[in-house]
Image 1 (spheres, helix red, strand yellow):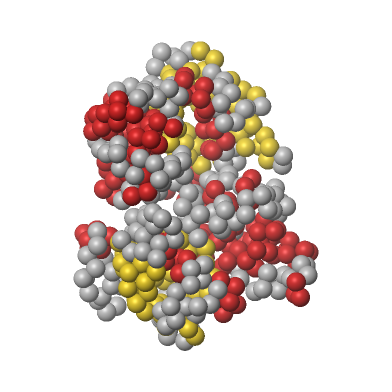
Image 2 (spheres, rainbow, N blue to C red):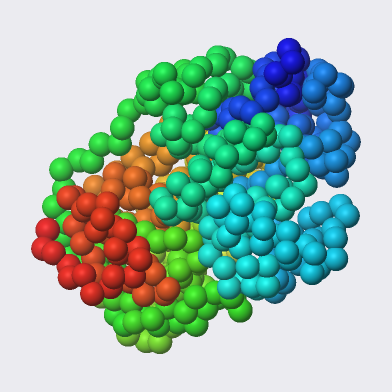
Length: 505
């Protein structure tokens, strides 16, 4: 027991209609990188929130270094040596790196002293940061460094990381892994949550698997195939997405010399973007976060109007059309941000289904909502995309991130768009759900829709795309056939080699 850092015995936490954690027991050893695996809604988030003091378990016991551990709030957890880097960063764009780090510390030193500590510690762990830089000017990878360094400055015994590589380039992932291995060698334990099983296999020493709130097994990732780990998570073998034979037809969406201002003060302007997507085609657009993805989606959806002649849908100029008019013509979108943009947190799933489906599903003729028909639509989404929720009456914020993502994607796909634009379709989604979403996108294209997938997951883009283009600092590279693209070519495109010429398919 001397080498056990944290022991969890019989932890249970229930919410109305669902048991999130059901008699969960496992242990994390000193200096171990321990993976926590499971489908969306398996109970991973509830479990780490209990460890971090955000959730109070109903029953069960936690022991940290031989002493009872039951923290009422994150502040107490940090004092005990437990820190967490969340999937969604909590940073203020207008403040400096040092100022942001100071806000997350209980007793921060003077700013000059803190800045020097940031320089020293960030360099020591291979994550160099300039404490004077304004956060709004930083890349997603640099922002994650801030969250990690803020934790390291508090000398953690246990570092919890939730989907830490979802916004990183392959090079940044290597850098992060080197840092985590250094921390392990110094005795820090790491609880690592990720749906990327290849990363789990490369990095982690042990994995505990949750399914429907219950621990169903554990394994040594280095000795277990990714297929076997996925099967432990879902209880059955995964089927890879299959594309029906299809010959792309005429252009459905044409973008010509699209330029647009950023969506916010620290955003990225779009500069002279041109591309076409044909009937039955999937265009993958890759890029590191913060290179204009949000601005591109806003311009295509109609949230930001652009000059006439820049965007046409099936031959109709829609550059000055607003979102509802574009949706009526068949252009549907799903943004990256689930809560607050794609879904209203406090509204039920039924109400959220109404928000974008009112016209195409005829849910409110003459402005009078047909609630029965709207509930039926929400239930169809839940059934078709295996959304884990007690009912369509549940609030959007009550769902796990992955289950809400499945609902948002399903809501748009079931409306049968002519053109569908989606940003980060499987971000934070488990392997089985990711495969199902990718299959749904391929089926949509096979049915004659034009599909644009904006994603930071290169494996995903190579799996579903016919053509591939890279977004860098608001500019889009020439479209290349996805099949046969090498890692080196993709790297050049992501780095801004916009002069690479398109090659005929």
